[in-house]
Image (cartoon, rainbow, N blue to C red; front, side, top):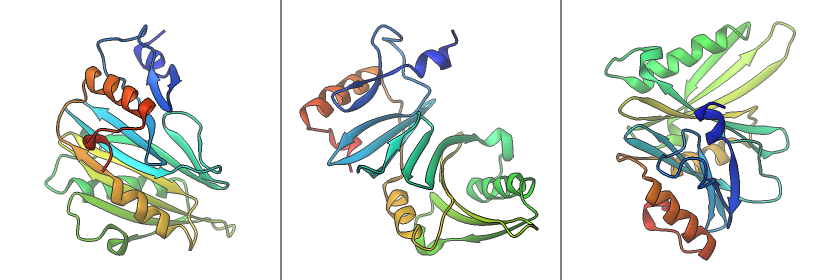
Length: 209
């Protein structure tokens, strides 16, 4: 079994989706992990010497399907990924280069793609970009994808929410507001502390903003 498959073996520990101590006691999982804080789902996604934090509502409609796929409500999902800058260019504008890379991908899956940068949802943040992509098929089918990109040293952490509608913008804005980069390595000791804190309901400040 590969390390990646082992890292996907999650157990629920006091509301915290965490690796079994028998798997990798001295390593941080490659996959996103989740716990509950302030009645919201919190996500941590580590990559090398940095990790991203984000949160989303915790209610009866939200279902964690696996570490990378979340059902926010019926008919609306979120995919969590990391795009290495080696895949789309290492220029000065990582978020812009990533958005163009995503556009090229979606153009191969639709007959026409319209894009708009949603500054009204991202605000004045320079480390984050929200791109709305409207996919059109010649058959008349349409789908809207919201791509939230968070810049990092090695690339872009990405939350993709679809299929969007006129009511999705507020949720996208809410999730984007929580999407932040922590510029240090996520340690096994910190994960163990979070698991313990989640069980007691006292989440450290670094993980609950």
